Image (cartoon, rainbow, N blue to C red):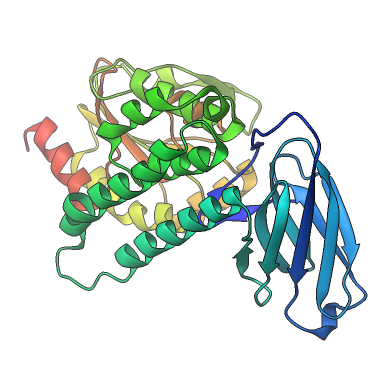
Length: 349
């Protein structure tokens, strides 16, 4: 199945609403050079990869025409060259760039909205990625994130019941101010709420609320790599503070946190404190290899896959949570020096 990539956010399961009557589209796709001549270009639906149309490329150009009942968020591709469009009634043009880049169509109302959203998103991402000031963290939280929320949020409000709004809400969920998200979800129309990516975000947000700081831990049981059942409650809520690292051996940022965790382990491991690794999203043999290579000596739950990440609303690793002696979640999202300071604080050392 084809997969469609839009900037940093995967767009799956998205179908735009339109008229119930069939209407004609005409798409002109211009490819980079003559090497594409004679090859077949495809328009595929981004929500399931189904082929909506195909055309031979001649003189660097593929011409598509047909009828569409509902506008569909789609991908046009040939080999490594790809572009995104909303297949809707009207005259649509897409000038594809060099292989490896993603172009955007123009010519119809929803394609203009799509282009405006992508342009704004890329401008904002360039702004934070190219920041040269000394206080990057301060700039991110006090300047960039509020600006991102306001500008992408404005696009969402104008499109709260179509899939431009769906994309905007996905961006807001990833980079916007967390305190504002409930309000945006409350404004989302049925079209947006019904989309698969938004349904996944809603489930994650519910999981985060159920496992927020101050809440009691949620147990899970898995079959480890040796075929034995192991439960989270075998370690959590047993009278110790437990620093839990949800990680994977393939994850570079996870590996970079290991020395910090090792420092904490060496300093505090004992009657009041322990460290636990929970390996997710990888094969057990890969985890075991990483444990050996990294010199990890604290206990590990292996082969947890997505069970704990679904429960705790984790969509990126490493994700490190500190649990209290009774199993209460003390802090989550810990990293580096902040993690060291929090452990020292709760242990009074």
